[in-house]
Length: 161
Image 1 (cartoon, rainbow, N blue to C red):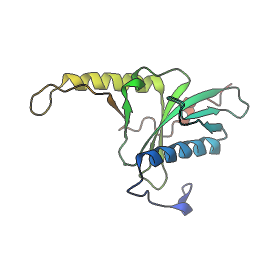
Image 2 (tube, rainbow, N blue to C red; image 1 turned 120 degrees about the vertical axis):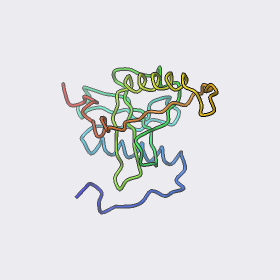
Image 3 (cartoon, rainbow, N blue to C red; image 1 turned 90 degrees about the horizontal axis):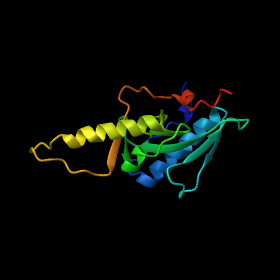
């Protein structure tokens, strides 16, 4: 039996973007707490950091940016700022809500920054279907189609001393 099986519910089709994001943050905080960590959701005006998390004796800590999708695919939208916003103690947790239990993808911020910068640079070099040049935008996309980062909570490195 999977966690929360008795609470099976479908995600409402009309769940708006703000509530989707909030739901993702609470799911991540809940999962971190379930794993024995201290997770605190930040105020809405904390740029780039949704959750501050530490181990139970407060000897290690990380910051987490949560990105949530209602779709079942393994891709999430970011903006250009994510190319430059990274550090060894900053992570992304990408959440996919279109399941009975959310799927979590834990990724170091430097991996996300490199991926989206490289992918966007290559995309811009290509042409549209009509042969015209693509226009730059601030939108970026992170994908984990191989599920390399699925449930990789160990990447946070909070258990080691």
